[in-house]
Each structure stands twice: as C-alpha cells, then as structure tokens.
Amino acid sequence: MSDVRTTLTYLFIALACLGFPLAALGHMDYCVFVDGDQLCGLSFFERLRQSTPNEIGDTLAGFFGSLAFLAAAVAVVMQSFELTAQREELRLTR
Image (cartoon, rainbow, N blue to C red; front, top):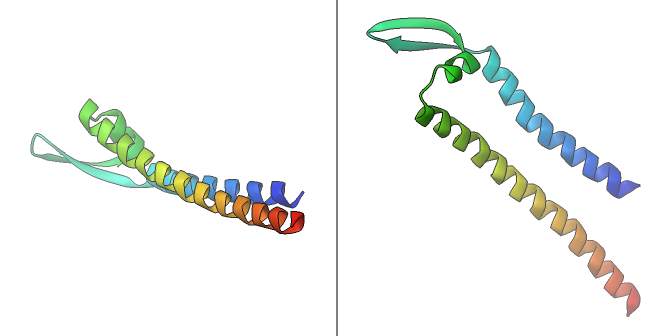
C-alpha cells in the first residue's frame, strides 16, 4: 500500500509541476508587434494559435523537452526505490 501511495504522490507532484505553469501561461497577456503596431491583450494560447508552424514547433519542443527531463528525474527516483528494495531482498536471502 505504501508503494501505491508513494507513486500517487509523485504523480500528483509531476502533474502539479506541469499544470500550474500551463494555467499561468493561459492567464498572462502578451504584446505582439504586427506591421509596426503593438497588439496587447492576447493570451498565450491565442498567441500560439496565430503563430507560424515554426514558432509552434519551437514552443512544443520547449514544453516537451522539459517534460522529458521531468520524466527522467522521476525514473531515477523510482529506480532508486527499486534498488533499495532489491538490496533488502538480497540481504534477506543471504
């Protein structure tokens, strides 16, 4: 039961680390220069919708790169727990 709770705790932390920045981005206003005029009041997602495919790709690469780093960190922590459990089992079999 403790392993399930630990896993759910880490999953909740990971989702919070992803959800809060996305929610914050959705509420921030951006100013954009179009043909020399400054347009303000666009949210991040409205700005993303009006971007060129190259800008969208750069944004998604930044987001998923951070997500991959987070996944690697979670994998290291999970492997650490598994290695500790394996060492304990090896000690008990001796």
